[in-house]
Amino acid sequence: LAPDGYVTVDSRLDAALAFTGPTTRVTLDAALARTEIHVPGAAVARATTGGGAVAIARRLTPHVTASARLEVARSFYAADVLGLAAAPRWGATGFAVLEASVAR
Image 1 (cartoon, one colour):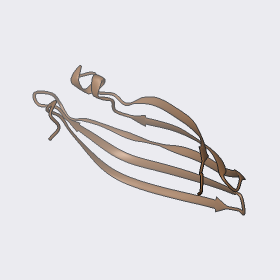
Image 2 (cartoon, helix red, strand yellow):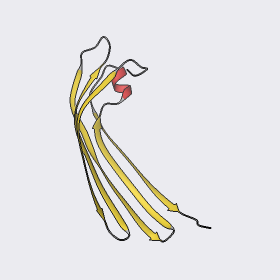
Image 3 (cartoon, helix red, strand yellow):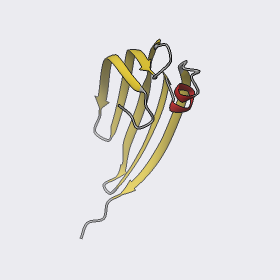
Image 4 (tube, one colour):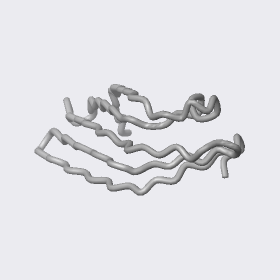
């Protein structure tokens, strides 16, 4: 039970696939779920949710790696659930990282 009083129950299927080369790694992730939201005093909200992600990492030099990830999903969000407008929405997020390793 979450501190704000609602419970999310997922029946979920997840899958992932990765391709790895000498300097590059690409991953694909996917999820599909049947989600139920239980809010005290409200009808149970049910919907199909899920999404996917793609990530790539590439070694640029022996000490520098660049990576990026993009995720897109349809899900329930707390502000909607607590406002009793419980319907899933699409969301997306992405980020990139440049990583350097330093050896002594």
